Length: 208
Length: 208
Length: 208
Image (cartoon, rainbow over all chains, first blue to last red; front, top):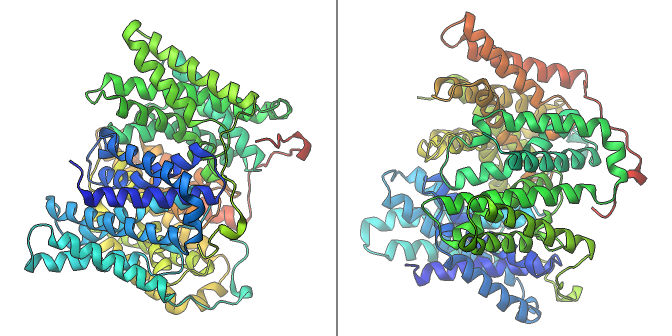
């Protein structure tokens, strides 16, 4: 059974993928493929990493169905969506937060429950779909670019880890989601960027 | 044992990879590496997805040998091959059709024989090698670009699925191959493209 | 336990990733993510290929810790590092040699000890991290570009294979490392490139 939580994340990443595809002037199937890749990419990476094969997204058509429905919705309404500022980034942030929380929860539930595995798995699951999306349309993935991104994901996993001491059930999952999303949105809003090194062009080895 | 069918697919993808490498002015080993990656990429992705490790292509040197021989052939004759129109696309289409058919057959033969898994595995195996090839030379992968591509692969898998009701043995495999190849070649020939959204540049959020 | 040998390789790849990130003007966390990806990418690919899940780098935080420390070091001293000629390439060569040797050794130690598997696994482990690094910053991976690269890795694995007849213990590993590094450095120094095909632009099919 797919929780509402996972549906939200899958829709959010599918929308970010579809909008990115439209922005890059792909045709309908290109947009659909990009939406599907973005929506299921992180989960597939997670399942390969923990040896859960075939990955969930291949066994349950519901993920691809959700991505398809989301793409059709975006295809009809994208004119309005593009007017909203930063709409791709907002959907991407929701997807990041949902999949980070889910990836980390899986690590805590498994036999390999160290904080190290949880952070790695949370960040990979959260960022995997977006990395594939950006690579496929020739962009440097967001996680390597300017705003606080992996940082939000890492802090979210830490929040889940420590809140497990005090809370039970799904609370740590939701706390991770809220923490990651909040940090990411605040960073976007205030354009809080980490420092970038100042290098002179003549310092750079151009033979590289 | 490698069937003639698989050899054809491996040669086709190796040729498409080698020609792409030559077009991008890579040296001989760059061209060879790209040919190998294109020829075995889809199969490796398939084997990782179904948990068949180490992947076939790593256990049997025959795949890499075929890619090597194909690359040497292309290296000698590329002057003539480039004069042929769309030759990279035609070899890519043959590879797509062979590997789609093979990937889907494996899904039907396995314990996870739903149509959903077959479509996912067929499309991934068919498109995986080409996606790696295009990513590595800085192109948006064909599957996300203009012409009918994943569509051909999906319809091919459906043809294999339904023809299994009426035919036995290798027939469904060949029907899938023929369907995928035919649709892809027709789409190429008539430049049948799916609609692309018309967006005003001012609608696009440039902060992305 | 992590050998000094593996630490050297992890540091070398982390430094090459961090310097590449700085060159591309990523912020600190972008640089860190790129350093981590470069340092652990090859090992993760290797572990997925041999079905060793979750990969070592996810189970032992030491790899990510080494990449973090290396990144901080690079962040402080990059001004001096960039003045040195070809410094990214030199660190990349050390990483290539270490991970090629380690990947091939694992293949020889496993149940699938054919030369074919050893070469594939050595080359993939050696080049995997660098491929991810280059893909993520929008470069055609070094392994597909001009200088002798995969060739060095392949000859290194062959050296390990044949030296196993005469030497025991860790000697074949070190011989592989020394062979790969030496060939790569000589190739860099003398700009020994393999031939590149001469094609007329009008020969290239521009519809591709």
